[in-house]
Length: 276
Length: 292
Image 1 (tube, chains in turn purple, brown):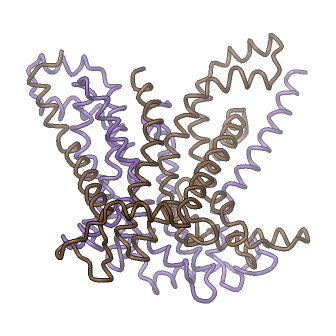
Image 2 (cartoon, helix red, strand yellow; image 1 turned 180 degrees about the vertical axis):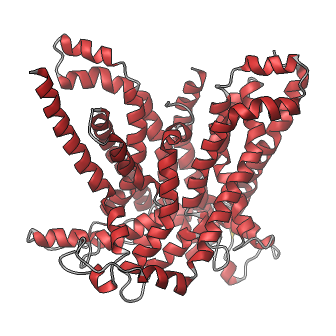
Image 3 (tube, one colour; image 1 turned 180 degrees about the horizontal axis):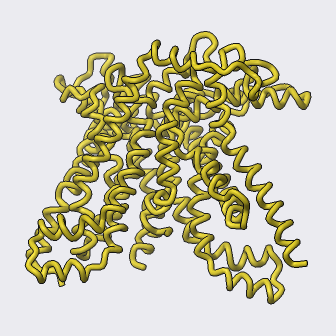
């Protein structure tokens, strides 16, 4: 019977998919679980799954010892600031490329993408020198500018692909009705572009939050965001699995939640609109 | 029709982004180029104010002839290639699986995509300690359960371990993009092929794979951009030891650890050239996609 076959098949594919999904998710699950154990329980042999005394002490210790809130705040400011600044600069650029394309538009877009391929390490020292010169080292402002610049190509690309889907006739109609350029952007284009802009903001916030080259190399005590805070656990003293887990859980939780909301936009955003 | 006025307005609106990116590219690049031709050891008192000694192509020759150079290029290629193969192959299989009707598809998708959102320092440290620790890691527990001796992953199988960690981070990305591409496949075409008696493998090879080729190219392009500059995963796991020193990491060490700016800058120029070879090749593909 055809129906029985498909049900059987559904059972098998479901079982396979769930098994693989759980394996892929396991490191995250294990980290979250361990964050609620004591240090002794965290390294218990055999590993403890649910049969332990759940505790929140690791979260308290991490916050107390290393002032977690400060790093969190730095992450929020740096990721948020760089995204916002990038959006403000990218919207006019993407708008003009999408609606007033010229022969060079394609070249400019590709060139922008190519700046993304410049290996960061190749310009690490010059950037540090400039940072020292302008007193930007270990400041949130300096980091905001750098993260904005490395994500700017992606922001322009994403907005460009969204803007291109807005029918040009509507803009022409607005122009015929005597709308100025400013009005055209403010009252006609922006409302239609809001969903695309929102997705762009979300994705770039995530990318900036997770950036781990410049945040590690350009910050010390003052402006260090969560990426650098977690890296300080790479040379630990004593038992630290549970505390590392608590710190990690706090660092990834906000972005995991945002990420799950953004998964639909993720594909388009990171493929420069080439896969929809 | 775009008017002359709107064209010049467009140029003005593009200006901030273009000027900023141009500055971001040219200023540090020029400095790196300049440093690469000088003797620049800040710890020995060299500084820009006092003037740097011009040494021609010395740094370039020394960087190439240093015993760490070719191994680092090899490591870079193995790492990028390994991650690309693992994520693309597993990504295709996983995307085809997730395309089937399954119970709880939404939740499965969420679980599979999750690693992509974990910051690199966290995933590297979690894998290093919670999973790969030779005494208390989960892998050690599993190995002992089966009576095998636990592996010191990050010292004995360091490069494979780093590839594993990075693949875990990027598999969700590949899967998600390939899944999106598979879902746009015309199912009637597949059904027709099935009716005509084409076996599953042939259907995959002649219908699914060609349909995916564009998405696969995109996955490879974007991942290569990010993988060439992998840093945090090496920084917090091995610190470049045990054969995990990529070109990126070697340059980082020359500039930051040994404070040999001239030599490191020459290395940086090589890295930029290498990245550009990949970039030109990949840009063509994106450029073609832009026309359609």
